[in-house]
Structure formats: structure tokens, C-alpha cells
Picture 1: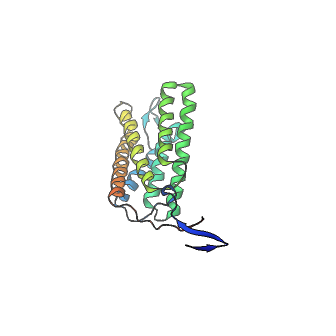
Picture 2: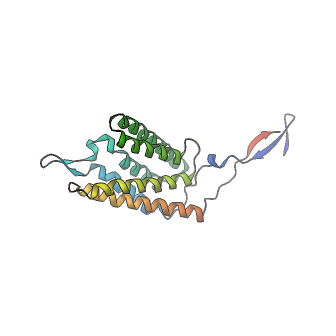
Picture 3: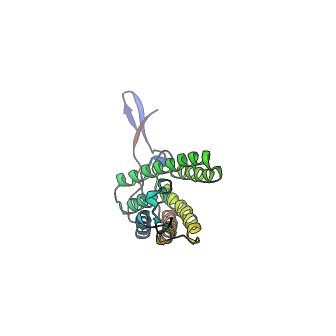
Length: 204
């Protein structure tokens, strides 16, 4: 502690929520990354039988796109090794959660029983990733929750007679994302990321 312009100055550690995640070695990366990219690719694959011989592709139904976009974000986060990349992934997850919540509100006005579920999922995802700060634990927990939601969503689709290859692959990748998020969270609990305290000047 020293004197600075006549005032005592000390070094304090910033709140945990403001500490950047460490993009180091994580064993979950191959599973989470593969599941995420496969889920994203399913956005371009036939999902359900449409009228006649045509098939419905998720890309043609914008309200159904968030799960696939989540897959892309988690694939990106799993592959990145820089703090800036991880930060960008967290910002993208916040944006997606906001979109899901907003879409749920719009759907609620038309079909309340469906909209309330989507709105609730969006709020939970937004609360999980947080509106401020950057922590790797929130990333892992978001992957776990999104994997569980997608597994339920695509699982319900897959048992219908109109389900096509895209839905079945989406279900498999959702299970992979769920497992990847779980492994990621356990890995963080067992081997938490080492972080260097940042000295912040504070006057007394």
C-alpha cells in the first residue's frame, strides 16, 4: 500500500463475475464442439414431411432456428482458445436468449400455451448466462440446460410419423450437447480455471 496524491491506495480483487473465463485445455471440447456443429448443420436438413412429397427444412421456419444457432455458438466456443472468442460467445448467447424470450412473448399473444413455454425457456437461459460479467461456469451451465431443452424438444418430434433424418440427428446432437455441458461443468468443479487477480487501485 502506498501514497498517491495524498490518499492511501490499495489493490483489490474484482468481483468473480467480472473475471474473464480461461480458454485453456478442456476435455469436453471435442464432444461439445462436434455436437454443436452437427446441430447447426441440421438446420439445413429435411426435418419433417410437408404437404405432398415436400419436406420442411428448419431454415424455412425462422421461429424454429434458435436451437440450431445455439449449436453454432457452442461449437465456436468449444473451438476458440482466446478470451475474446469466449467473450464473443457469451454475448451471442445473451442475444439468443433475448430473442427466444421475445419470440415467446409474441407467440404467447397468439398461442398462450406454446408461448409461455418458449418465454420461460428464454428467461431461464438469459438468467443462466447472466446479463453482466463473463464466467466459464455460466457457459457450461447454459450448454447443459440448452442440451436438455433440445433433447426434450427434438425427442418429442422424433416419435412422430412425420419426423425425418434432420430431427433424429438433431436429437443425437442435443444429447451430445447435454453430455458435453455436463462434462464441462464437472471439469470446472474438479479443476477450476486458474485466474490471476487483477490489481485495481482504490483510495481509502
